[in-house]
Amino acid sequence: MWGHRTDNWTKLLAFRVKTSGDGVAPSTIQITKEVGSNSPQLLRAYDNADVFDEVVIEATGPSQWNPGAGEIVVERITLSKAVINSAWRYTSVAPTSTGKLVEDFGLLFHGYDRQAVL
Image 1 (spheres, rainbow, N blue to C red):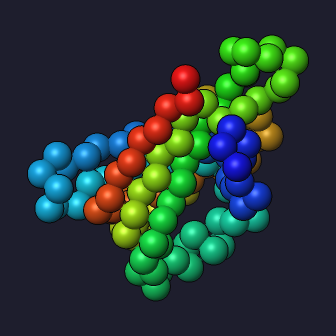
Image 2: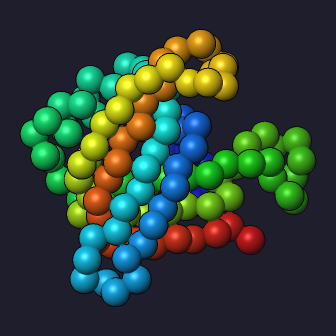
C-alpha cells in the first residue's frame, strides 16, 4: 500500500548508494543500523551469499498534506538481485537512541528504482 510501511522492516540509521551508471556492473549500497533481532539473519545471508530478489528502502517523514497523520513513506528505493558482500559491527562515536552496537552491511545489486512521493 503506497504511503505506508511494509510489515517486515528494519530502521536504518543511514544509507549510501553508489550506482555504476552503465547498467552492467553491479552497484553498491552501504546501510547502517543498530544491532537487533534481524542481525543474525543478515549475517547468515552474508555467510551464505544469499541473493535477494528485491530489497526495498523506504524513507519516512511527516505528511505535507495532513500534518496530524504521523509518519508516511516519502521515498521508496527498490534494489533487485542484491547480495550482502560485507558486514561490520562496531561502537558508534555518536550515541544511538538505545545505546546498542551499530553494524554496516554492504550490498551489491543490479537493479535500482527510486520513487518519490510528491
